[in-house]
Image (cartoon, rainbow, N blue to C red):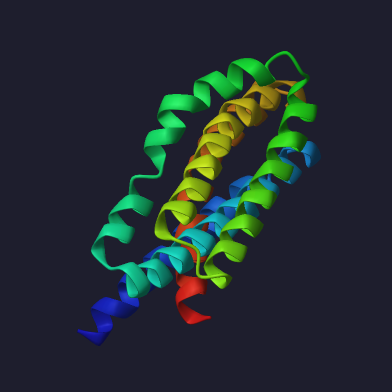
Length: 178
């Protein structure tokens, strides 16, 4: 049993190493975007996991289900926000979205610290999900401008989803340890 766990852990470590090598092999601007995307997703995983655990302890199963359904507002309204932001350059839009996400996380932390009602916390998480839904397409839109070869572009397009999954897992684990 312990040998199986070690083998599974070794496979996971190799996957992380491959994903990180793929990101580091990219051209400098793509490497920065990939690294930033990885860190954003680590933070997102930690934030959502910590918030979910806290709200579950305070409000029970309903809170956990509502936080889990945070992608619904993003799916419904993210495209509307994206349409508004497409009038701006992708870089400027990403800057505004990053600021909005920071403010949403700070608002969620303040709401939790202030013992706000569950509806307030869920509304903040919903706003964050809308902002996140607009973030991903804008980031993808700037990748072709940063790539110097088709190989770099395809490499980044292939490695970013893998790094996202690994980062969210790392974020969830880190919040569980903290």
